[in-house]
Every structure is written in C-alpha cells, then in structure tokens.
Length: 264
Length: 258
Image (cartoon, rainbow over all chains, first blue to last red; front, side, top):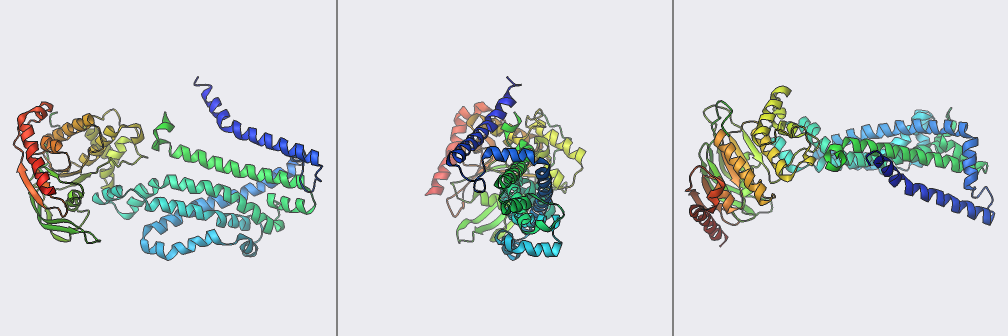
C-alpha cells in the first residue's frame, strides 16, 4: 500500500492534464489534416513534435540561454522583492513615500523600456534578465508586504511585552509569518519571469551572442516556420511550468510543519 | 505536584487609581477603576462582553496606556519583576517546535540556547507536555496548544501572570483540566494572577477574589473574597458553598447589566 501510494498520487496529479494535452493535440491534428490548413498558419502537432526532435540541438541551446536569463531574473525578483517589502514594512512613512513607485514595476510597458535597457546594459543576458526582473518583481513585493503587515497583532504584542526590538520582531516574527505569502508571490513571479524573458528576447535578444527562445520564435515566424515557432513556445511553457513546480515544491517543504497533514 | 524551584519568586502587587480608557471613537471602555491586587493574589475579573475586561488587562500589562489614571506594578522584594500574558487563543509560532515556542520569551531576552531550552523543557513538563517537545503546533490539539501557551508564559518565572479568557475556546473537560493545572502552578509559584473570564464557575473555582465589572463603561460593581477552602478539587464544584459563591458573582453580573 505505502509503496504504491506515491505512484498513485503521481498518476492522480499528472494523469488528467496529460490526457487533456494528448486529446487536444489529437483534435488539432485531425482538424488540420481534415481542413488542409497550410503549415504557415497552423502546424500539425505531429510536425511540431518532429521538429522538436530534428532540431533538438539548436532548440535546447536556445532553451538553455532562456533558462539562464529567466533564472537570473527570478533570483533578482525573489531577493530584491522580499528585501523591498521588508524595507516598506519597516515604517508607515517609508511605505507611504515609496509604495506608489513599486506600482511602477507592475505598470511599466516592458515593450517600451526593453530597447532602452539594451542600450544601458548592452544587449544580451543582462538586459534580458533586467526585463524579466521588472516584469516579475511586483507580485513578490506586494504579496510579501501583505504578509508582513498582516502579522498576528497578539504576537506583535507578545514580542513587545518581552522587549523585542524592531529587528527581532521582523526576523523572528513578521518575516517567518509572511512565508506563505512570499511563496504565493514567488509562484506568480516564476511564470512571469519566463514571459518577461521571452518577450525581452523578442525585442533585444537578437543582438546577443547567444539566441534564446524568443529570438528563435521571431526568426522562425519571419520565415514561416510555424512548426519551429510552436516547438519553441512549447519549450518556453515547459520552462515556466518547471519553474512554477520547483517553487511550489520548495514552498511545500518550507511550510511543511505549518500544517499537520503535510507531516503524517 | 510539589514545588521544584528552590525559591518561588514572590508576586508583584498591582495598583490602579482612577483608571479611565477612552477609545479613539469616543467610546469609554472603563471608568474610574480603583483596584488593589496584593502580591501573590489570584483575582478573577468578570463582566459582560465589551465591558473593558481585556482593556484593563492590556493596561496592566503596559500594552496600552490609559487615558487617565495611574497604574503601578510593584516590584517584589527580590527586585525582579516580570509580566506574562496569555491570550484567548494559544497564538503559537507555527514554524517552531513546542519547546522552541515555549523558549521564545527567554530568546527575546537574550538568554543563551542551553539555559532557555532547559527552562522551556521544565515549564512544559509542569503542564504535562514533556513528551511533545519536538512536535509542531499543527500536530497538537487545542488543549495541548493552550498548555504550550501557558508554559511559554511561565518560562520567565513571572511575578505577574495575566490571562485573557484563556480557555474559553476549549471543551468543558479540557477547560477544567487546564483550570486545575493553572491553580497548581499558582500554588507552587505564588505569582500574582489576574484572570479574565466570563464563566462564573471558573472564576469561583480558580480565584481567591472576584471582581465584577458593569457593562460599558466598565466600573467595579462587586469585589469579593471567595469564601472557599484553598484546596480546590473537582468535587468542590458540586457543593452548596460553591453554588453560593457562584450566585454572588452571578448576581453581581446581573446588577452590572442593569
């Protein structure tokens, strides 16, 4: 029983989405064959899989380039997002003065700013990661801050009663209390960094020495290789999923003791 | 349970003079409160919901400042004084083990790891949780969590213990067991205890003295020494004396509501 349980859980969580994926691809395949859609409009899923296999060296190299930029962007978002939230939570006045500017990250049109970034930082990994960072840092700040300021007031009183200072209250109480919120922010950020990276590669990556998935998508669509476009899109989605899944897993590990069920 | 600590710290006495608390909206929570609690006394404060019982406790703890009046918590002769506060719910840190939760007050005071672990373990053994040291709050029942909360309050060996309806959310049997445990702690340590509750029987069972507040703005309507033997055992609840004492408090509550 106990040895088959993990397998059963694995099938139960991954089975349904895989079935949906296969069924969806089959439907598209049938439709495209039946309607005789030209390949530059919609590629047959089988053709996409074939391309994925035939051009795997080229595509995997592009995936690796994108992964590096996305990881750097995500790391920057996670670290500075939490740090900014801690600064904002430290005083009402700091929060009032600075929080409008954090919204900048959420509202900035990345399409407009990406070319500037590539001029400031030189095209390539740095500029692409910077875009990924800008696109993904806001949810980390917003969620972490929400957790930091919503700390149980009774516990804040308790810390006060025992003479805890600001730093002790922050790092022994507020920050650990906000961890569930931090992970909510990081989950959102994980998906956004991949989107930000690919979009940035569209705009600034072409000049770089390495070509990421965004560059592959742009040049393939210019040349009418929709199969390659979709193969690259598939890889980008897989990257996003993998990052999301990893954050989820780490979050569950970190928060395991908070919930009884996770330990039984 | 015999006293293990060599010299039980004497309690702090508390004096309130003309205490009045007005909330920002203009609501008067408590009005002209004069209260003298002797060192080592066990006082229960009762009153209808919203009468300012918790407000009074927060003022005594120094968490809130009264609008008017004076609050003094006197140092016992030993010179050290220490206030502990137990909330309505256990309010533990879910990411910490039981022993590390109980050790928190000492950690915040800068006591070294080995000494605070030793003190926390001793406090947990006293409330019957010696075998749950390394468990997490989420793995405990409500009653056990409340006992961790009690151990956390006792870990500094406080001279004044303030409790704000601490067992209200628990079932009857768990509550009575915790009442007994609290009473034992008090008998072995002799710290001053101020216990807020809205249960007349809990107040009479636990306390040496009951203070009843009126409805808002809260004023003291009854201040009475409980006329019961010092040995409080479960059977006491069934006696005529117990019923009489409970009725006095109950009548006070009724007068306060009027």
